[in-house]
Length: 178
Length: 417
Ligand SMILES: Cc1ncc(COP(=O)(O)O)c(C=O)c1O
Image 1: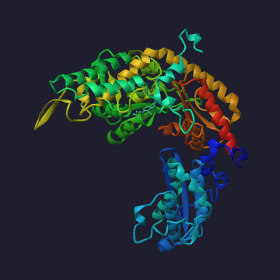
Image 2 (image 1 turned 90 degrees about the vertical axis):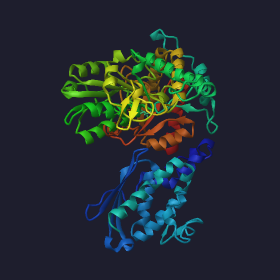
Image 3 (image 1 turned 90 degrees about the horizontal axis):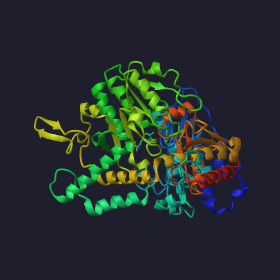
Image 4 (image 1 turned 180 degrees about the horizontal axis):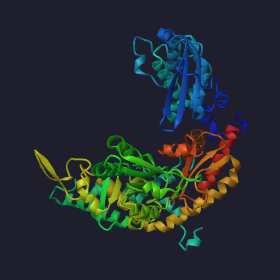
């Protein structure tokens, strides 16, 4: 666990915003770590070419034909990388499991908004305003633990680490035809 | 420290003062710059040379009769002679300016490679190579069915020379790094070149990491091609060098087409200019070329041999003091003695991911690089996705390595592992 010495040290203060206890907890004890048999599951792979981080997302939907209404019956995370990429993917897996693809997409947008990424696809009429404010709850899923990752915004090079799992999840949705 | 070599040790305090950036605090810390393998810093002399060029001499080179353009042309051509002398090239016409080593290697692959390699012909590489010395050859493998063979490594990251002669049999080219940008391994290039030549292959040396740190003599290396980048030897970004034996350059087709590389252009064809201009299409990076020559002047005034000795003593110090301070939590990749390696040390530490490690080090002002260092085949050999890499140059001293050790100890405490 995080050492108490680190509190009160000036030169570390920015770092404590980045490495919150809950992040290190997910890093050391990742949730939903492993693989699923493919098929019926689908497998998507994401790389961060800058640092060599790699995330594999296995997705088992109840019925891909239901598109965005499909439910994520199971999700597993593989790969290797830094504490930010791995903990973000772990939290993501815990958050979306048992929810619909639509809700997971919503959450992905909310998470990226927290990372200061406002994508064109948000567009439409006012859908973006839903994500402004503190984005504590979007669709049916709460950001919950994921809120701990907001310190990443202060470290721009690490935003790509935090979003790697999410982009891989979106790719998994595309691959599974939902 | 370098007394065993009989060379006068470097006065690092004085050298540091030559590099404006090293005197600037970063977030309230002294900068501890340990990433020269990615790009070095520049001394004032280089900045001033480029500034002077722009203030006093700039016009486009060649193709003009007025005095200013002649001064610019002279500045560029005298830099070419300077670079030729720096690598021991018999003639300045054998020096081609490019934008970096990557472009130089692509030039060799696209021009010499496409003109000379037929399906099934063999290019031999090593697992130490940077992507810049891999991807252009993979592209040729795809487009021209060239076969690539790989010289493997010993567990401590030196080239495994056992089956080299088998690998070289029938090969057309060996392209090998002068020093690994990940492990610091210095391959026995001259010996490899001899064996390659005996097998009838040409030899290309990716000297990106070796020219900044050791005396380079193309003849002693047995090279047929040699490439490097200006920005790793205290020169500016945006300029690189290809040296090749003049018979090779003469016989090679142009790489990029455009102005500056032609003798004549008609509606139905063109005649290329003589070497080296045949390979320098478009307006060259004139100020950067001038800056590169100033960097070489600077390094030679300090003394390349003294720099080599200085870095070797720093590497010895690091290989001893870091494990001493940090114990079993530290794994250093690559050769364990300074016989076979230069001033680049890649390591793993306390199960902390290199990206997280360098983040904590950065909060101490210590710059090391995390990642795969553009050497993914080597990362696979090492069985890691990434390493943290520290590298030093003439402006570093043991206090920088101590600062690295302090910061690593703090990172261990921070993550409480
Ligand atoms: C061994 C080696 N080769 C080639 C390169 C490519 O250099 P550049 O990016 O300047 O073209 C590098 C730079 O990292 C290198 O270390």
